[in-house]
Amino acid sequence: MTVQRSPGERTAPVHQLKVALVGMKPPVWRRLVVPSDMTLGSLHDVIQVTFGWEGMHLHAFEDRSGGRYAPPEDLDIPVFDEEEAALADVLPGTGDRMDYTYDFGDDWLHRITVEAVRPAREGEGEYAVCTGGRRAMPPAEDLGGVWGLAGLLERYADGERPSPMPVRHGDEEWVEYDGLQDEVLAGLYEEGFDPAA
Image 1 (cartoon, rainbow, N blue to C red):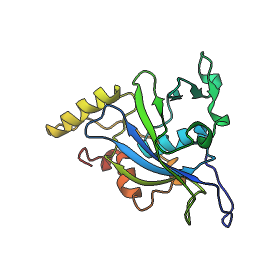
Image 2: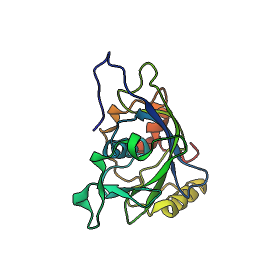
Image 3: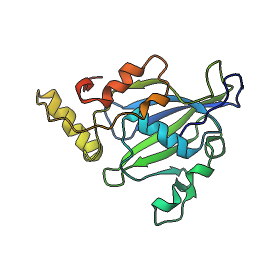
Image 4: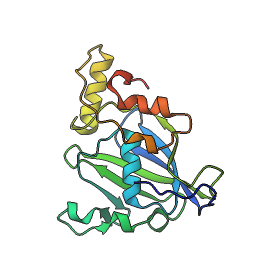
């Protein structure tokens, strides 16, 4: 789900975020510009698309004080509803950060850092925009977390080509990649995976 506005409508501020996988060397990250009033539930959708996740597993956000945000019906612990929490409320300023964990078995930990909160520029604020990133992600569902991915990359570096894993396509069209679409989306598709990207 995205936050959409009518074409001529100016927006409130936007958040420029850096989302990085914790424990990956070299780093895997994406730079996102999103509406400040975007909910964490919508940010979850954006992270899923820009990192190539398929939404097959549970997830949760955790702020620096230990507050957890997730779909309340998904977890057996008390959490704040991610659909009720806007970025501007939980990450109000530059330098603020929180964590996003996807797949509690593989434990893909993403660090979200606010790089800037600023007025929207022309064309911003209507939906999420991926303006930068480093390293494409291979199909990584149930791969074993950062350790499994590191092993896969090592096998690729040694010339081995493990069989591709199935990937669901179709959710990526609503995130604009600001000229990086081919580069970032290449990691979503088996035939486009380049471990050096």
